[in-house]
Image (cartoon, helix red, strand yellow):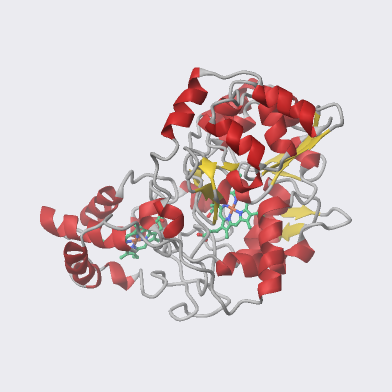
Length: 420
Ligand code: HEC
Ligand code: HEC
């Protein structure tokens, strides 16, 4: 279908929602984008760019899961953009033609019309979702990319619509609610996924082998979607340090996203083989891109610097945090502090007062000291989101280690954590 007839669809109606949207334009400050630090200059720029394109746009052929098995294209075509935004999907404003941006500003885009969703997919403007649209305007295939869970937007246009911020945890993305729309899942599985809530996903519940969804662990234990910036010099990735970045990218790219490729780890009994392998050859560039993602600086005025410097002294002093969270990455598995590049230094769940069940499903059975970065960006905290805010984190350790911190010491520590 030609662009002009699409324009007819998206420009036809206007809704109350759109008016609200238009009036909020300009009300939101794009401060978050402005405070993002520049990429690290020493990575090979060509490789970084290649990795960026893979991270944002490559489905690795995972339409074999999202379309052929889960039939998500059937449901996505019936979802109004307002609903898509409400479950945390983001729109990349830079992918929108000027005419669409103008129409949005004038409140002439009907965000209750599912045809607009399909059009946004055709324009490749939905962050982390790729769609194939036929000449007749029908959505025939959908797949997902890494950016779905690990990118947000700066809300510079309006909430959920703005410039991409790769590496940011998409803390309001409700993956479970989205997948539960699949007509291919049974009611029990749908209920399980619907219970995850926003900003969470369970990468240990099942795996996809190219044909079938293989059950791995039950019941489901969702973990928070983490940010993936600030991982340079951190030796072992994931909450349980199963391996370095590329190990986990391969695990997720193949078994979770459903990409067409190989993944094998005898420690967790997985051996998936699919030829051609559309994942493995891309891991190198993908790694270069991830390592270039710097943690975003805290927004101006978001913490009290004087209290934070008192908090810093507590962090490495009486509160004993720095015995595990060692600078500059604030973990003890980084390339400077870790015992060896092959062996991660990990903690028994009881040692840090954590629920052991998720770790028990991993290759290590233990938890890695999370590298502290961009903490202001991605509440809740701990792998299971059991600490709603930073004061809850401090209270957890205060109880666990009987630190007896005073309320003002706790407040100072929180200010320091907000500054990281
Ligand atoms: C459906 C959501 C989802 C998608 C898509 C996804 N991830 Fe993740 N990712 C997660 C979750 C949840 C975790 C936390 C798992 C854990 O640590 O046990 C995670 C962890 C990570 C980590 C480790 C972060 C850390 O702090 O150590 C990296 C790196 C990562 N993902 C990169 C990627 C890349 C690259 C892709 C694409 C190949 C991708 N992810 C696709 C949900 C997702
Ligand atoms: C014995 C080692 C150890 C000590 C001491 C320690 N931590 Fe941790 N920290 C960890 C581990 C391990 C995790 C990961 C726990 C999980 O998510 O299951 C963690 C996670 C965190 C997180 C969550 C980060 C995120 O992105 O979710 C914060 C914040 C944190 N610690 C702050 C502190 C503070 C503040 C102190 C001092 C009061 C402290 N830690 C003391 C080992 C430690």
